[in-house]
Length: 241
Image (cartoon, rainbow, N blue to C red; front, top):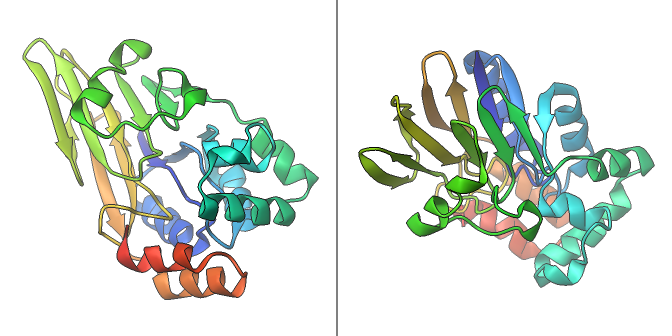
C-alpha cells in the first residue's frame, strides 16, 4: 500500500491539484496532516477536494483558528488576517467539518499529527535534531508523520543510534528503527524551493520519499492579491520562504 502524505495546503488550490495529480501515479491513498486552510485564496475548494479524496485528515492550528477552537491572538499579523478572511469564506458545513477533525490519527503503522505527537494542541515546531528526538516517546507506531514547520526532513532512532537528515529525504525503513518524518508543505514551502512538497510512503517496500511538484505559482499569487489578503502571503510563494 502506498500513501501520499500531504500537509500544509494552506488554501493553495493550484499546488493541491498539482500534488493530487502527481499522487495519482505514485500512491493508492491520500492522507493529510492539517492546515488545509489559511494564507491562500481557495480554502473552500481545498477543503472539498480533501474531504472527498483523503482517507484520513487531522487538524492543524489553522483549522483551530478559523473555527474558533483557539484564540487568533496566537497568530502573527498576516496569519491572523488570513484566518479572519478565511472564516468569511467557509459555510457552516465546511466549518463543522474542519472543527471535527481529530488532533491525531493512525493509518497502518503510522501516527499522523500536524505539529508534534507530544501535546499536539500546543503546536510545537519540530525543526532541530533534538526537537525530533524528544518526540519519539510520544508515539508507539513505527512511523510518525508531521508537518507544521513546512520543512521536510526525517529523524530515526534504533540500536545503532540517532540519525537526522533535513531536506528532500528518500529513506528506506530499516528493521529495528523508528522514524519521524516531516513531509514539508504543499501550499507554502519554506525551504527556498517553490515547488509543492509531499511524501510518498510505500508501506510494502518500506520506503518514504519526499516528492517535489511544480505548480502555477503565478496564478496562486494573483488570487491572493485579488482577494485582498496580505501581499506578503503572495510574495513568499515566489521565494519558497
